[in-house]
Amino acid sequence: MTTWEAFASEDLLRQVVVERMLAGVATRRHVDVAEPVGVAGKATSKSAVSRRFKAATEAALSELLARDLSGLETAVLMIDGLNVADQMITVALVITADGTKVPVGLMLGDTENHHVVTDLLADLVARGLRYDHGIVAVLDGSKALRKAVTKVFGQRALIQRCTLHKRRNVIGYLPVGERDAIDRRLAHAFGHPDPAKGLKACRDLARQLETKHPDAAASLREGLEEMFTVAHLGVTGRLRRSLTNTNCIESMISIARTTTGRVTNWRDGTMKKRWIAAGMLEAERSFRRLKGHADMPVLVAAIARATTPAAVTPTNYAQVA
Image (cartoon, rainbow, N blue to C red; front, side, top):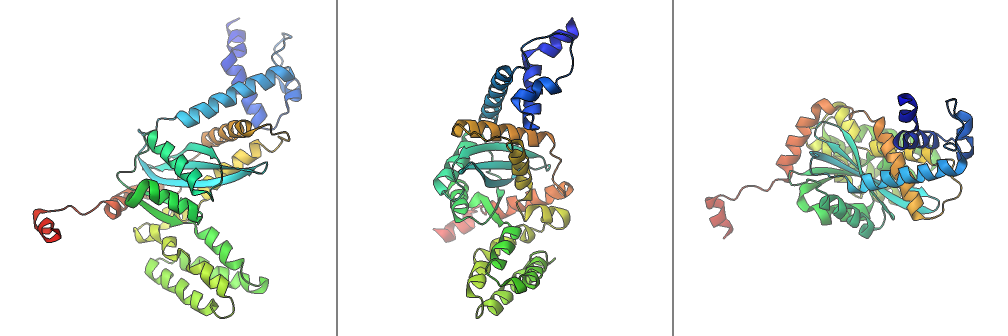
């Protein structure tokens, strides 16, 4: 009897329903995949499954949007968006000082709208997100994202642009026959052990592209210095490769997309947020620490040095006065 009571408990039933729904099992098929328990009941009816999943995803959304972030030693913040039935949802992921990945928020609205991103970041700060020690914001290159990060965090944030997005953007302006060669040069420059030489190689390439492909050259020059932010902090190896692109948050988004793949009738924005929140928390269950996390102390110390204003001593105070 104890075993049945545990199996039939509402929390456990909700957990099973969520796992099956996120795995793509339709509401009408739950009875077919349920384990035989020897008792006929209504727990696996289509309406019961739907009610339980709605309640569970409402709880997931509430949990995500109410998470206390004050206990996280934030080192990196990633922001990206996904399209759900022609409506954008912006999501945020934090990487802590030990390399742990934590989904922290989402908002209905486009990453290209700085008001949306500003509101999302302001909500994170209101929930205790710490940035007084400095953070690195890894972005896809959106001007709205950069504007919002600067507005909310000011000089405490260092911007790292995604090198993969930059490569895709640049070669998009080139003839197909020239793309592979230019992309290899960009990949080599962005990964150069000496960031100063890598930056110089990109500038040289932009000059070479200027005459025949001026738009490609302009795309390469836009925000170019921010392709090397992490490298300039002295970060190398696997950690540098992990933090010079948005793969971490895109992996989370990919899992969220997979969990919503069978949904064909999106009733409203709240439903979209519920499903994406559930997908983000499902992704969190499979997260591993960031590749190269052993070098995170190097990054954290470098961020603090780069974002902490120099102390004003009596001597230089007098000079300022």
